[in-house]
Amino acid sequence: MAMKTAGAKKRRSFRFLALFLLPAAASAVDLEWAGWAKNTADKGLLAPSQDLIVVVDSKPLGAATNAQVHFAVDGGAEETRSLGHHGTANYDTHDRW
Image (cartoon, rainbow, N blue to C red):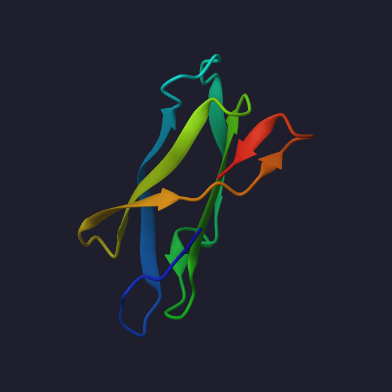
């Protein structure tokens, strides 16, 4: 998910606070794992015009219904954004968010 973050012309610092994956209410399987989180912040820094893109996988397929990321930019207010489902990964054994 690409997220625009408001900021000055300098590089912005970025830090993850939490990642939430919510299991399906009527799921026949439990969420076993979430990980392989990746983002476009190079060593925690973003260029002024750079989008923050966050990607995470969950296992097994269909166990999570949505994912959210909780973060702060430049030590400012904490924000939470939903990650859209972007298909599957790892030979169709993981959901990609």
